Structures are given as structure tokens and as C-alpha cells.
Amino acid sequence: MGIGASIFFIAVGALLAFAVDYQLWWLDITVAGWVLMVVGVLGLLLTLLLWSRRRGSGSVVERRDYRDGPGPPL
Image (tube, rainbow, N blue to C red; front, side, top):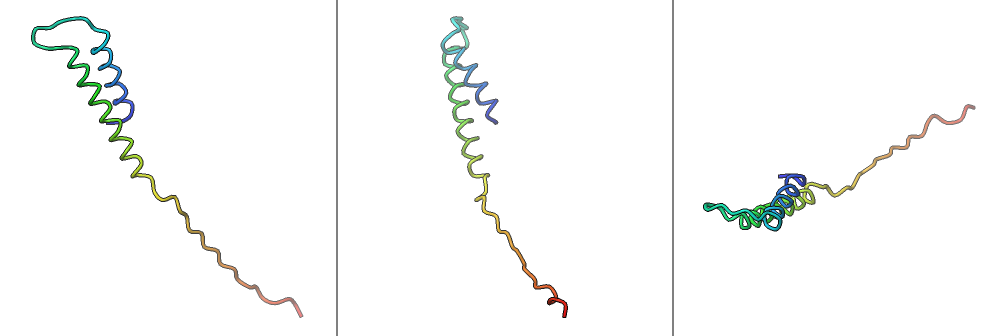
């Protein structure tokens, strides 16, 4: 799950948990919203953790060879 999907789950979960006042007999919408927010936060943390590990050390080794040319003309 990427950052965009995580933010989407957090936003939809917040809407369901705080803004929707509708009752279903088989589903508590507030709890479903909280579950979506938790899934979104966990996905965001996991994505950021994996991104930080994917970055390399950033060190670059550059090698330069200097060669002497033929001497000055005589």
C-alpha cells in the first residue's frame, strides 16, 4: 500500500467515524471508520519504513587516473 492509498483510507475512515450518522443493523459504521483509519496509519508507517530502508548509503567512489604523457620535445 502506498502513501496515497494510506491517506485515502485515513480520510474515508475519518468521514465514517466522525461525519456519518447512519445506522445499519449488521454494521457499526463508527467502528468501521476507526478500523479504516488504523489500517491507513499502519500502511503509511510501513510504507515510510520501507522507503527509508530502500535508500542507499549515498556514497559514490570516483577513481581518477593521471598519466604522464611523453616528455617535452627535444
